[in-house]
Image (cartoon, rainbow, N blue to C red; front, side, top):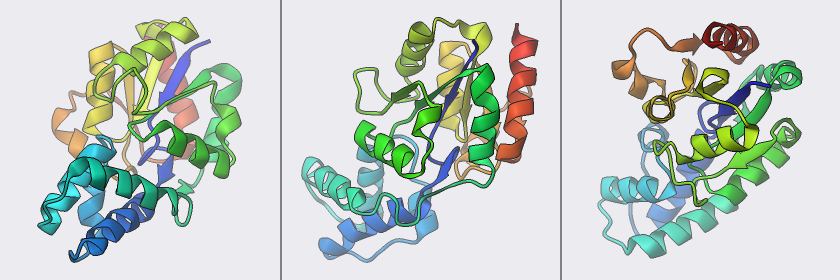
Length: 221
């Protein structure tokens, strides 16, 4: 079976508000002024350590990053699913894809947060493998996680597609040599625009994914 590897934030789920609320709770706790949600959204995609570093810098706070990261993760853990939701049509797209492909998650979000969100939103059963950003496989754009998923799924670059919303996902797929499908509706899409070459698959909505991914895999084979 072909392998379809999904990013999480900005691809399957809209998690902007909960991430921003956790970051702002950290900032306020240390005497800073909260940042706009859109500002924090622009910091998302390369893992919690970099998100925390960027948020603290934007808020003008100088804290021990290890301590601040732990505090952020605890604050985020308290509000993982307060506002986070699947993008409309995502569940139906996964249901359509599952019979014909092995589905996996590759995210820079910590493993335990990822698994709790997938469980809480009721989509965990769709995915055979879930690889978070704090596993030994490294964080995207390091292709280690994608290479690992191809190994366990016994697929190659010709029958594997990475689905994401950002330049990080684009760079990961290119580093691993797989096909890439970018979702225009994701909050990281604008970061990928400058790197587009015209050979990428593009989805404007989750409902388009089954047809687009099927076409891409057939083309690659």
